[in-house]
Amino acid sequence: MPVKKTTQAAVAEPSRAKARKARFDLSPYMFILGFVVFCLLMLLYPVVYSLTLSFRQATVDTFVSGDMPFNGLTQYQAAIADPVFWRAVVNTVLFAFFSILFQFAIGFLLALLFQLNFPLKNFCLALLLIPWVLPVLTAANIFKGLFNDIGPINQILHLVGLGPFPWLADPTYAFPATIVANIWIGFPFNFILLYAGMRSIPIEVYEAAKIDGANFWKRVVHITLPLLKPVSAAVLMLGTIYTVKVFDLVFIMTGGGPANGTQLLSTYAYQVGFSLLNFGEAAAIATLLVLLVLVLNLLQLVLQRK
Amino acid sequence: MTTFAILPRWWITVAALTVTAILLSPFYWVLVGSFMTPTELFSGHIWPKHFALENWSVALSRLWPHIQNSLIVSAAASAGTLLITAPAAYGLVWRKPRGRQTLMVFTLMTQMLPAIVFVIPLFIVFTKINLVNTLFGLILADMTFTIPFALIMLSAYMKDLPYELVEAALVDGAGQLRAFLMIVLPMTLPGVITVGVFSFLIPWGDLIFALSLITDGGLQPLTLELYKAVGQYGIDWSFLLPGSVLTAVPAVLFVIVASRFIVAGVTRGAIK
Image (cartoon, rainbow over all chains, first blue to last red; front, side, top):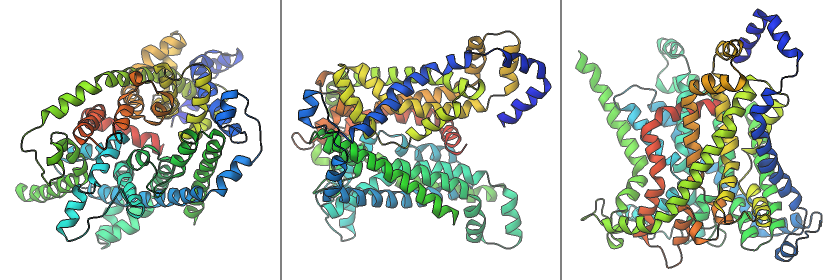
């Protein structure tokens, strides 16, 4: 839209536009100066630093003495030789897959429900945003309590004759527990975007289908889903980016344990860096994590083409 | 006739409220649990027998210094973010500087990077230049999260400005800066405020930068103090739960006041 307007105005007033072009105008650069400086010093520099660090030996000794010699791919070799690394890769992918699957499903069903108009709709909508805006620390502590050995979840399961499960003490249970917590944090984001996306589908399309005798589910499958595809693609891509990056939630709930059962690449990189004080290898793991994000996003693009 | 038309709608409301209640039950648990004694908390009660207000008074007095740290860091990061990104978003969208595409793509790319990519270099560099264990260092670090995010969201708001208006202001002889301050800023104020609040909430909830850059107990923000309270002597739920609710206060207030702006802002930033 704005681009169109720009050209129209330029056509209407060609002389003025030309006059302004004639002398080099510094003012646009004054507006972005602060941002550019920040980008260079606080975004680009750390990223480049992290990348070069992954090719350097940066452990406690070299860190204190100040010189961190280059040693090629040693850090990467050390990282991929460790079975914990591969455990973290598998966990990261599974964590993202199941989180996104359920976040999207819940968000989609809620968005469908909210296409209807009903009293107190905006009230419910506002409340449903809460899990998403809550600080991750609050959400993590909530689920730490809910999944406590004697906590509400085991109590509810007890009512139907199940459990008790050692949720956060056993790797097989701790991993799904962290995923449940992450689904809770992420569903509102999926909900809002899908809700807005569905509202932009013209109502006439539905009415035409209704006249043709399509029932509710047929309309969802044949109209909502296909027309929602661009929005769903954006939601899934953003979901992947956010979920693969998750750190605080798992770090607070389990610290990556027990027995690396919930270890993600993000928590593993942090541990290697700040507990083992091997910053070079931590940077290498961080680089591999970035590669994983890129690969997963490319994979999504390819799948969506089909 | 009208009652028949309204009745089914109320049934939908009942259904929607039920779904909302189920989905929000974890939040209910922490709210109510923060008023329970440790023995009552895990005994299956859904309402406290008597409100254990001492949970809250203890938590508040212990956390007050850390709340202050969090307030300083979040307010400064938010102000700094707006100061840098509001002019930049306007400049990039309307004044067309060279290299703006590169800058936008770079900004979008940083959103893909996990925090650890910034945490390690900033820890090493800040150690060298004595910025670890300073609130200023933490503010700068938090801005690596808020600045790209704010720029992307504000650019979307700036694009919605009518071009004629910006152009007219400049033709009328208003300086570039005046046009920005007197016309662009007031017109994008809802967007600027929304982004400002988000830029407050992100540092407020940050743990990873605080954890790696602040070791001095007196400088720890709220999140770090609460994180460290766990595990030393087991979990003290009567402290942890009110603390967790306290941490959530700004975000929940924001949702209550501005849910409409949030929905508009989020969908705009993500879909456009």
